[in-house]
Image 1 (cartoon, helix red, strand yellow):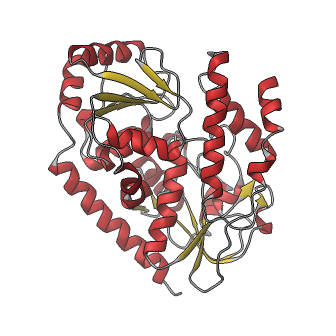
Image 2: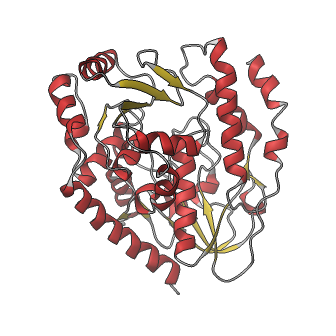
Length: 382
């Protein structure tokens, strides 16, 4: 905790950077999401959605919400990501550098004027506000859960819609109750990125929400542009943490049999050969583009594998099982989910070759559907 306090005293130089100015106009769109997380997937989904909307001819900005409570929780997690395992002292400078690189990346995004997350009515007014992607509706999120802004409360907008929103590990068996269901009735159009979220919306609102792609899969151009600097090489990318022991052992045996180096990015995994803990968001994109294959237990580890057409193997965790199972089912990549029952056989199949044409065709079809939804959203007039 002392390290967090000391580190936070040096952060205002990053947090107080002025937002990139944006011109006013009828086509100005605000996007509300988790763009300030020290998380590669959160950053890239925000950037890809913004740049995708810009390619559609819109002037899109991220709604720059601020919260001291959220910041403290976010930085604590970034400095101690493996809790209850304490962070090694020699890793702390690397995690701090990672955080600073994220802050530099945040500052380069197109941002609205800042406003307190607790007072969404203080945010700028937009003709259209798009909520999502990411776990914006996850009431179990450890620090964002329960903030009404992500349910549209208090936002000043002509229209309110969602794109690729998700409830995360808030399971459809739990049901979405009032006042949250009532808040979602403010949305004129709703799209989600997973089947669990679709079921929750159907149960709560009686609405068939559109199923769309995560922005990284829908608008991968920015990822490709950064990643094209790297060429494939003989390393296996490890993205995630707290992998089960049986999975670690299976991956280790697979890599050793092929003389492939295991490199972990963003988080310490002692069973990997090398650690790259201080990587920023663009470093991550290059790292994933350059890998021979990927092993992960994170949603965006799978997404970036699909974006880059890389062989990948994922293992489920309690927090991310909904997202991983639904994504792989949507695109037909169920074989890439590894179980303990037959890890070696499944791992060989998952890492043996890239996703393939059938998965590519499914992603293309979903991309068309997602594009049609967005075109309808931005052209809609009541």
